[in-house]
Length: 187
Image (cartoon, rainbow, N blue to C red):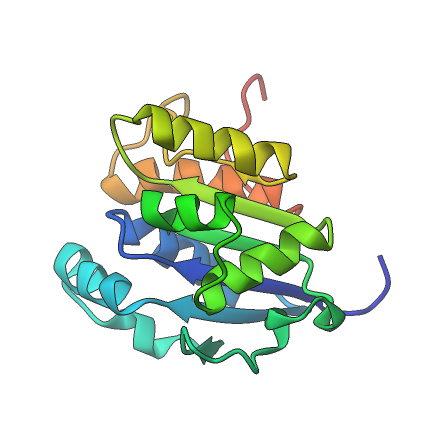
């Protein structure tokens, strides 16, 4: 890869699991040579405040975009964003992405990432899944997206809720091809 900055879009929906988004943003804030654009839905802000009991999302030094800002660079493939992560990804958002319904910046950006054959990672956060959810996941996967359920692992013997959630974020970072010091099975 050249010296060009990696361009990454992080979208945060109103699904439960704000801790995943926070831990990912914390990690990305410490990585050099990346450009991060963030989409944070109104529902995501409410869920973040409820689950994490803070508004820390306001403290990140990333560029934040409104859901109706179709002038955002990643609304077009010509901006060459490499990766998009929707974390957590609600089933409504997943369904709109699967069906090509680009009715806001998040779904437009996902559509762009897929059409440009770049990396789209959806951290699905729901349980149980309905057949509609599973079919939407299948559709996104067939279109080139990656479904990464927010399913933690326990090999590393996590002791705190943050350590449990970090097992999911570590998988996301690996899928993003970013250097990541984390527990590795067999090492």
